[in-house]
Structures are given as structure tokens and as C-alpha cells.
Length: 79
Picture 1: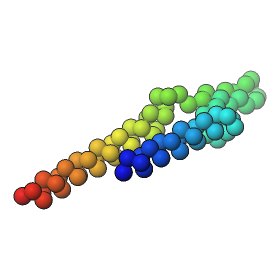
Picture 2: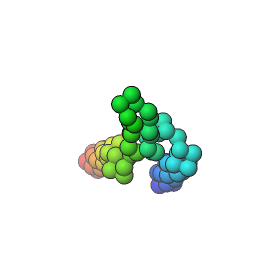
Picture 3: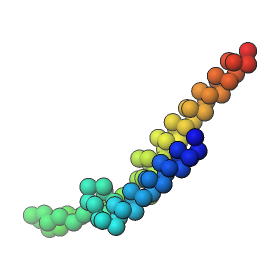
């Protein structure tokens, strides 16, 4: 089970690094500058906090729910 989590985390880190290196604008990882009629429009890149909110918090909540469910099943089997 641990190797699955490590593989997923490694793939995610690799994806982020490649997105920065290739400057994929659709990922939101790099700053995007567009010409607007009234000047230049800048879309800032994602911050670490943005990634924590988008990815890590939901994953942590899912892991917590999984752990609580496993503990409840173990307790029910003991009775």
C-alpha cells in the first residue's frame, strides 16, 4: 500500500517539474501574460498554498476516512 502512495506522489512531483520546465500554461503553474485592450493582463502562477488546498487537503481527508473505516471494521470483528 505504501508503494502505491510513493508512486503517485512521485508521478505528481514529476508532472509538476515537467510542467514548469515545458512552461505549460494550461496547468496554471507558470505566469501567463496576455495583451488586453487596456494594458497587459497577468495571471499569477499557483502558489504552494494553492496546491495544498487543491491536492493535499482532500487526499488527507480521504486517508483519514479510510483509516477510521478500517478501525471500525476491526472493532466490529473483535466483538
